[in-house]
Image (cartoon, rainbow, N blue to C red; front, side, top):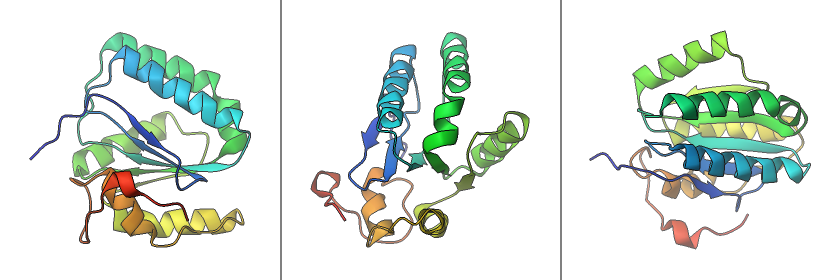
Length: 166
């Protein structure tokens, strides 16, 4: 079953992890909402690691893609200063291939990893946090699962409204 997402979901309850669940369809309004949220993250002036749950298909119009590209150029310095990296979690092999190719053409300003599921993401997240002297949240895989039930690998689903802090 495919869940049609039309709004971004943001969560920093596991800070310094900043979790984003990306919609399948991102309007210009939603992209602007994403940019505003990320600018608030940069304004903290603290190191963070982005965890991005991305569906296998993103549908965006040309104007939205253009605005997002402009914003990425405008925030390069903030990314360099504060981002420890981004892990993209997407179940689609084709989309992982497309993202990898895109990042060869337009490299990100911070380290990244593209994986199929949460269990593949956790070692990279843990290693990245440790390399920056940051603690790894306990039961990390279990605590990430509620953000993408259709992406999760084996393990119990949790109620995302009951996420506890580390």
